[in-house]
Image (cartoon, rainbow, N blue to C red; front, side, top):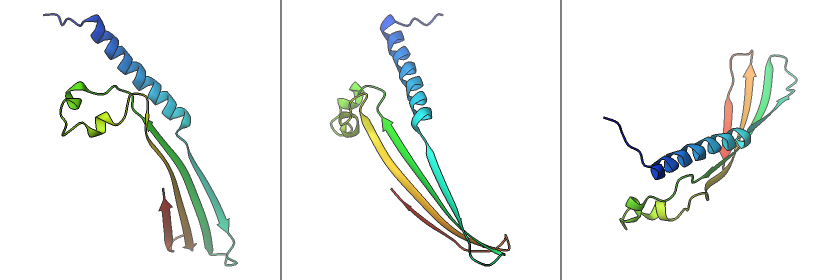
Length: 116
């Protein structure tokens, strides 16, 4: 038995694959994480103080159209109805800062501070 796929269904599948490939390309081009590190002289040869900072930006957008089955139910449609295809759904900047004190390359406290 052979499965018959209508031309309109093929176009929908093709569009979904193209949208997924385009999304992966955009993510790989623009999803960057930048890290900066500074080593601070403590005056003690066996103690090292490091300050590391990481900045990251995340972006997301809707690649598929709204689902008619979800939109038909008023109790479940809020998330699907609020965002149209191609519109952004997420944009976030993160900063992670770490301060490390290492003694004899083995011991020491670490402090982490992050924010978005």
